Image (cartoon, rainbow, N blue to C red; front, side, top):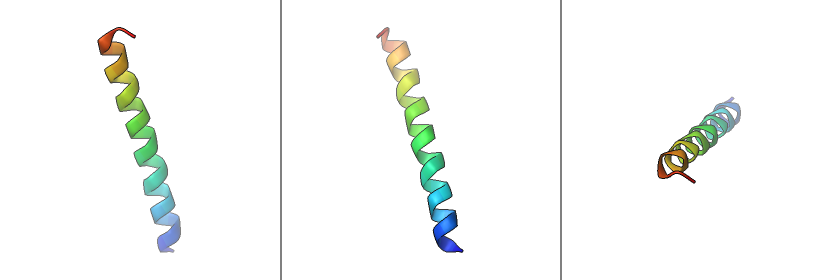
Length: 30
């Protein structure tokens, strides 16, 4: 169904955002 796909996309997007933020913070030396 579409709801399953949307939930999957949302979960993947949130993980990608967290990984991106972690990488940026590490570059800044925090």
